[in-house]
Length: 89
Image (cartoon, rainbow, N blue to C red):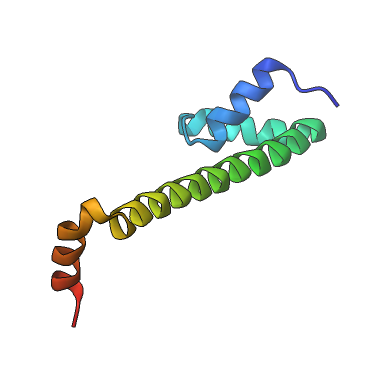
């Protein structure tokens, strides 16, 4: 199955909520009439979700890296102590 560039753009706009309501209805009708468009929509939705999860993982790793630098490197000792006083018991 090959998805046209136009279909791909429409699917992206649909998934990202960038379509006006009347265009959404027409697009949804097209997914019923054209099973291949519906299949492309499902695959593209999966790709969007995977990209979102990958971005979350990358952000989480970046935060861990900054945290590790701030709490383990000697030059950040005063910052670490202030944070521990703020949130410590």
